[in-house]
Length: 461
Image (cartoon, rainbow, N blue to C red; front, side):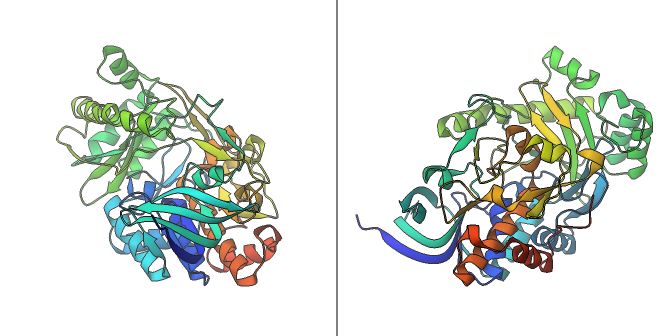
């Protein structure tokens, strides 16, 4: 069978949050850009119902800009944005209506001039002289060899970089992985009874854990009530969930996070389902997990209606379009982001994006490890964490960045992933325009261009 060929300047593999940002940035900066994804929809976790973490740091400072702010502004214009709020545990959150975000993502890709190829799987690579000369893409038309000057791997799993021979690490020791999760939504949730329940029973909720100033659980619960946003992080080790787990009314879980997605519909997203230590690069294992996760969704929705005020008349309204994956491969790059970089809030002259999410490593059952960044600030993502060792024209962006497992537990969230994506797309376009290898690009010039286009690289804690 003959293989079709297609030539572009920049190929982005994976249309999740990082890939969307990378493709938009590359195209806006003049590169002919193709964005490929195996699924039917662009957006990834952006359209799952999850809140966007690390868009603001724990001090309430914006640490993500550019593409992510543009998408949020468009959601706001369409009535699909919940303004940023503090969870009175440790985080500032930004929540969006996932149905509105679907529209915003597609509008942004079209406006930037990105060519989008869905239902298409990047199945293999052609490597010549230490560079990826092409990526084989398979769909119903057959196989196509897509040749590009720069390939940006936003697959989440580091598929392209790994296939090209980049060194990788997997999970904890190759067998321990953070849980996969299926986000779901419920509509008709009454905020006042929910928040009053939290105010009267603060011992069930994670509150005041990592604040810059001391605040008792009762004081934090009162502040959450006054804020009026229907959001609560029920802790699996505390009475409400722990007793339900003991009775068999709920599956073992570390948290049950309630976050708003639509004020008009009184709709919230729920983050609680989990299957730990599953290698999500094994397709059979990931597929086999879906029925169990679906049952957990139904179990959790029944628990909420039966046990949590505000949910009495709530109706199950939707499930994320795909299983959420926290951890698989990490590509080892020219620099490996470390736990110390994260927790000390280290700034670097070659920083091209910011991380601001706490060190956050979920485990099996109720296991959940969290540590706060110093002074509630942020840290810099070095340019060299996006450059896989041994491959000259491939970049990575998103949760497959070069990091230790602990550092990855912070950097894997959407605000940081989109910052990395915008930086990678911008660098790729610069490389094409200048005819310069990725490792010879002027990082100060890249930083200047990113700042001109809205990225936040300086001026925050």
